[in-house]
Length: 76
Image (tube, rainbow, N blue to C red; front, side, top):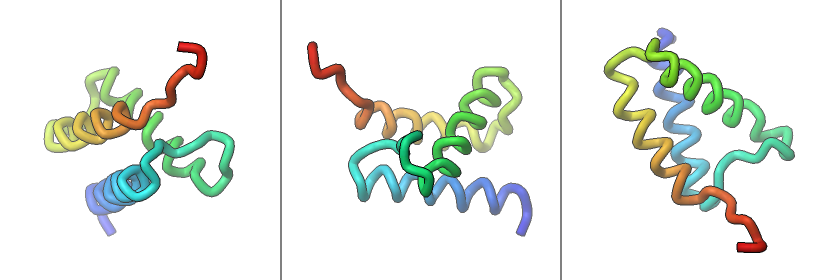
């Protein structure tokens, strides 16, 4: 399995998780840590400008999807 195939598999796993659970991976659930860490690591790479061009658009769509299910402050 190449690096691009692994990246795409993890991407699909995270998208499927968000769409099926209607929330982002939690840092409080151990079984979701791998997905959360993958998203955080790729966000760092994107912000540093080192992400491969073919991945940038896909990852931006993932961030838009995650933004829809961002947690809300109960006091607002």
